[in-house]
Image (tube, rainbow, N blue to C red; front, side, top):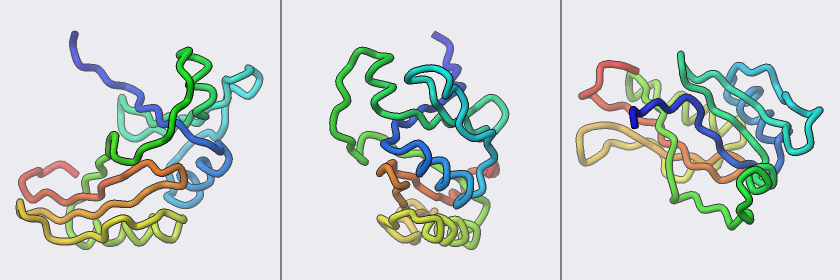
Length: 139
């Protein structure tokens, strides 16, 4: 299997609230909620970068589509990493997330490996890491 991840879908409890957080709070570009004409079809797509989208889809719709019962959400199952170009940019992203309604789990700080990172949770508890890695030139 050749790794080709094009969509990362996160389950949400309230699609309108999630849309507001990502579009209005963080400034992510999106066409808004699409697929409302289909039962269990309402979803938000956010273009993250060329070839990669973030999808916000109600947990009940994911359960319906997969046939799995929705289980309890856990913030420690995965993180979404947002790499930035400097410590100052990391601080600015964390401040924007807080202003948008995110819960700051761990403020940005110097890391043991020489970088700088912090964590926040979106309104559905998804964990984001904002990180500056001096070893990576792309951000």
